[in-house]
Image 1: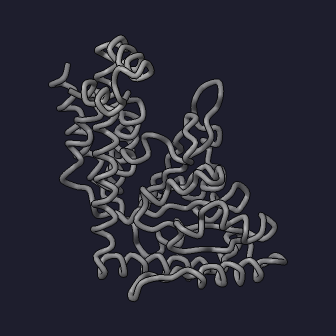
Image 2 (image 1 turned 180 degrees about the vertical axis):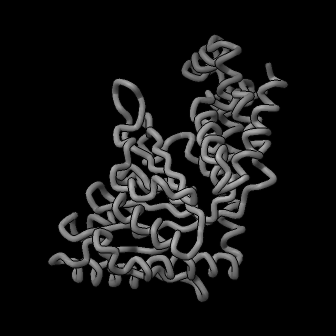
Length: 325
């Protein structure tokens, strides 16, 4: 069974990399993402095979995260940005992370109604992913799904998050470029600062810029960003005004994204960000593997050590050494 699965995975990766015009490419991408979504934890042999098969082909896509509070227009902005990127000839993959249904566990907004204009475009792949209760705004399998789209040859991978407030900062750990969307009437600048978004954004876009209060939101953001100290040569996040519904300002947003990608490459920040991301992922996998091993061994030993620490027989560091050893 393992040998058959390995052959299937290799065939799927080859088909996925055929690109637009190949009848099996989109189906292969969909199948690979389904495999990583359905895989259960670090012990999954299928997940390991998919990641190993994709490894030689990843690292080329520009991963862009779009985040912001619910109601700021993330889906509309994503759809408009896809159209802008397609006009410049880029292949675009979209991962839209939606709230999970409490009944099926699937994505509640899986139809992606606002993105139907791209449904027949072979250069665009759109996938809804259920957050499955994960509070960080991202699905647990989002990093693996990004690798699938990257390995399949997409030039840009857009990750649109659930939009759950302070936990949205998680997107900054996954994306090369993080775009924070705001809109007038969604709270003042102080609330934005409290949510932590002033620390994670590479670009800020005030959507619905044709509404009253948009100019004030933009001014407030610029003022707060100016208060921060940045080293010489550091990237200075622009604050753009857009109206995604009418696509006003989307050309400027696309140009700013391209400019940030160029800066990342020239400054070496892209390599540093991706190395940091890989380090955190390796650490997370290692910790998960340790936990899985403890579960296999049973919880009796951990309970014994916990009782010893609580009774003053062992200190927690010595107990941890015994558990790991």
